[in-house]
Image (cartoon, rainbow, N blue to C red; front, side, top):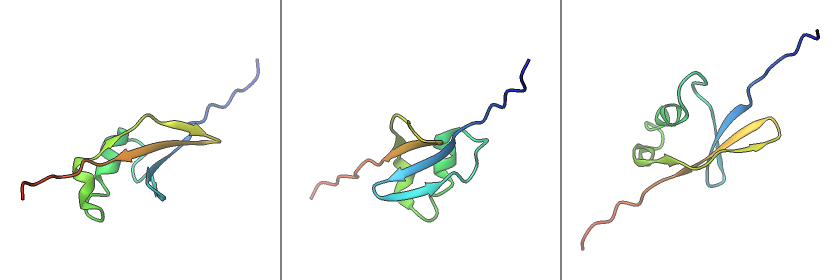
Amino acid sequence: MSGAIVTRPTRVFKMGAIRLADPAPNLPPIDAVKLYEKAYPHLANAVLGEPQLIGDELHFPIKTHEVKTKG
């Protein structure tokens, strides 16, 4: 029997061209993204798209909702 090693891919959060490292790998992905709210306030309304495995990284696209006001 061989000693198989199981590794989890590194999560990366993508906001356009910006790559955000995973600040808390043990949290669910959306909760980890919320930790960036202080630097990126618009992430308060963010949702994550379908992750894509690229090499040894799991890329989560961040989608933000535009706030529309009547004017």
